[in-house]
Image (cartoon, rainbow, N blue to C red; front, side, top):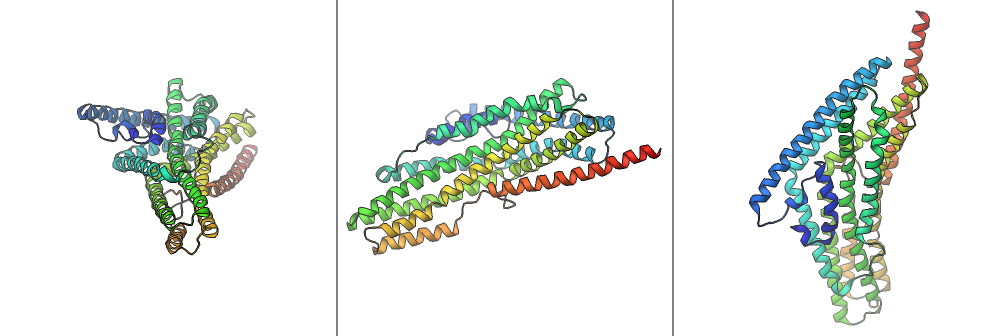
Length: 402
């Protein structure tokens, strides 16, 4: 199994096992070579039936929630665009589940290739840093994974049922509420699965940056030709490894494109749906709607986390040109032709291979996009409230006229 060759994957696999329970990703143990092929085939067949049962459950939850939203709209007599928005939001349960299952089926081999590339990259980095290794990190990868993914997973899974149970209304039965909570948590965990791979790429970038910083320190005092040639070879290896990280990010982005795109769409639409019902409950029926704003905050934080981690990874990647410039300026022999040529090639590669976490090129996943997302959501909220005020004023005028 690939986890035996990679400490990074061995740390990440417990989280990926949790995601596989929610049918978000194939079990990590299904990748790699194993002597028990028949047992592996039985387990994968069982997981296929389990994932199919999860998909059928999502269909049932989506169907009954659409019926419940129609009954609630009739009860509150707000059948303008509230019914349409609610039906689209509940239908996204099924659309996201279908997209995720198709993505697992179609890109199964690609995911296996991603695991293999991570294991190979880590092995080659360990080999390259035996003589030119950097300082140890202040925080380990295991601690960073637990802090960024584990803590938020516990908080979200523990808080969302308490916040959203009441928001479902009296038209949804208790067993259906429990299944709906399972589906909602399952969809939000896709963001954390993406964060796991971003953290792995971030760790690989940090290791290469430490190695390059150590090379810069060696170049300051190195005047012997043999040592300079060895440093140039190490610099070239560092350059090739960074190019492989850039390709790895492209594979990860392609794998998560459909699911992350639907997650951003679903969370944005759900926030508008929550604000719509908060307005109806507060200003028409004077009922408490504080929990709806807490749900909206949870959804926004769940989108903020991948944007924040991606931005940190991009910032670490963008530090390489500055280190290359320091090597050029502080080298003991700046006129050494092999070193000058190597630095020029490395700088050109950094200019052309920009690290971008994107959703199929439709938008970037970083803090700049998250700020634009907030502005867009607030703009739609203002438009939504304006339509609601106009519709309510017309209804009251008709009542007075009658």
